[in-house]
Length: 180
Image (cartoon, rainbow, N blue to C red):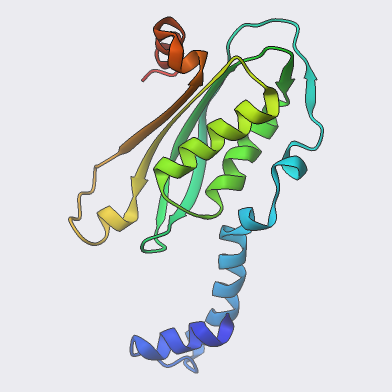
């Protein structure tokens, strides 16, 4: 990747031999590998067996999970907060694993709509939950730095599965508790 970054620097009119840019290809290579590390992770690795017997069937919510991703159209960042809720049937998941699942999917080239759905489906499958709800609120630099340049725009997406989709009361409880 470093050779490609050097070519990009030349292509935009820079000198990759300039003092401040000499190590830039190496730094960008490391940064891109970090920002896209989700491709090298699996759901099984991330969960790592942190599933436990559910003692109740009450709603579980983890909200305000910050995330950073890169849009697949411009490879510019989008970032925000992810809110996750589920109703367990037999299993609950370690709370830190919810954040790790969000990160695993966010650390790939993404669109927000797909990211939201991937998180909800992963939790539904892993937990065999009665229902899962995911809401993401994000700002997209591809919309703020270029194109329409709308600085205060926020995109909201949701994915409701199982009882979160079929029951208005469940969906309303979730959205009320996350402040949406």
